Amino acid sequence: MKEWNEIVAKTGANIPTLRHSTVTSFLSEIKQPGAKFENLEGDRPNIWAYIHGPGHHKAITASRKAGRILPSAEIFGTVDALLNKSFDQYPTQRLSKAFEESIYPDHGWGGKNGHITDSIFKAKLEFAADEADELLQASLNSITEKIKTKKSNGIVVYNDLSWKRSGLATAKINNATLYYVVDDKGNVVPSQTSTWNKDEIQFYAAEIPSLGYKTFYLRKGKKNPKVNKSVAPNSLTNDYYTMHLGKGGISYLFDHKLGSEILNTTRFSGGDILAMGYNGNGAGNLPK
Image 1 (cartoon, rainbow, N blue to C red):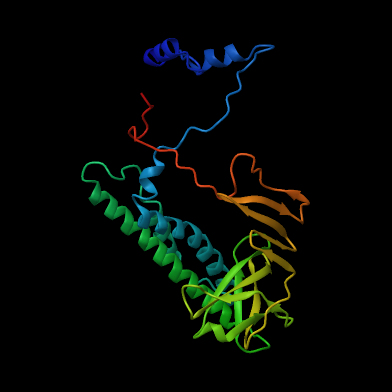
Image 2 (cartoon, rainbow, N blue to C red):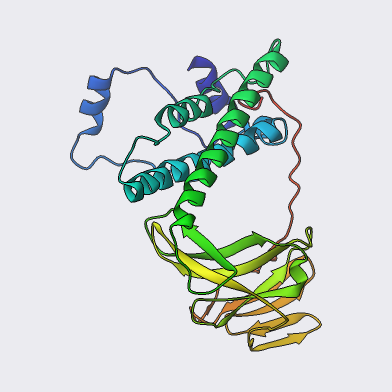
């Protein structure tokens, strides 16, 4: 505190001074009529971010995958058990082990002999991610077998959230360029072949029920949904947006549903990349 207060006194920095206090005396001092508090806004940069993003890319990717898929595996494992009217095959031990391994990594990344610690952490996270994926696929396969579709080439899209969800879905099929997608009413659904895998088709799955599913169908041929759009060299307009491209990125973006412009491009364009520079000051230390 003494060093901190000396910095405040010498530099005139706009930061508060510090003094020691017990909780009781602190509360009695602020609990006064007309007490005024200085409003401080802004974020303190997370200077650990440079370590666990690029430095442990594979481990953190596995961590995120496990964090997303483990709850889904638990949810649909329960749904499958309820449909089977028995929890005898519910993977209690495997789920518990996977959850345990997913939270094993703690403080201690890097550091002295950190390559050993890091390799253990990575192995734990990858195990959790792989188990989550395997358990989820097993339950979804079991549930899907019980769905009796009225047409052939059905694709079942599930939603593990407690609200309706819309988004992109993918399906693997040999030479996906030969197919298009329709919904359960026969309406053409926006779709395209994956740019990195010719045996994968991507399509827009709309309004998937909460904790439920919706069925789509593959059809051979080529059909595109009707899209109202106007394309110019530096602008695009459709039913949802009007977008202008300028130097540095998106210079104008208007949302037709909201009826308002959603980007303030006075100083920066949408998609601008700002390189602020960073020389490093240690982990958790204040700049000197």
